Length: 229
Image 1 (tube, rainbow, N blue to C red):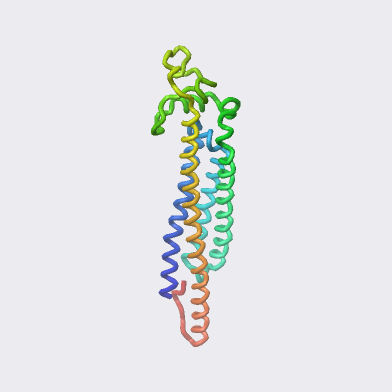
Image 2: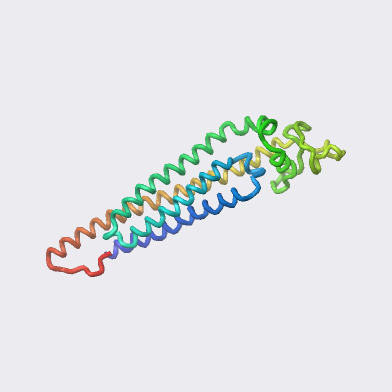
């Protein structure tokens, strides 16, 4: 029983981290969805943000199933098995979302100029032109030097110094690289947590099977188990 308790408490800890990742993804995705998309929308679409919110909610919900099973593993083996199945589905969904983002990055940089010219809204372009939070990159105008400039703020046509500002090509690429690196790091971290939860749950199921077998043998020998979990 002591060994079962040890594995049980270990799973509680991993489940807590698991649910935190889900709640964190849900909250962050909803913040993104309710905020101004520029310039984030140049890197990650609203559809991916919605998928992240849905996936975060699913992770939090499946975590509850895991807790229900882990509280009484001997009596609730079905919950643990159901959690394993749901966890595998979550891992595959996270890998799928990561794959979508990764495939998008393969051709993203080569299409930035075309996106700037034909697809991005003026608000996205202005956000890049005026962005000053990216270290090493100041004011810029247009994508290439003096090309496709949005006449606004420091890049207004009436501003004689606007001709001194470079194009935003390097700034856009640096922003996209940094943003995608954070996304990939987060997804990788979530997957690592999921793997630990999966392995610990499998160990708990095996441990409870052994404990259940001992209880059955003990009952045949006349022993009682009032508080068996």
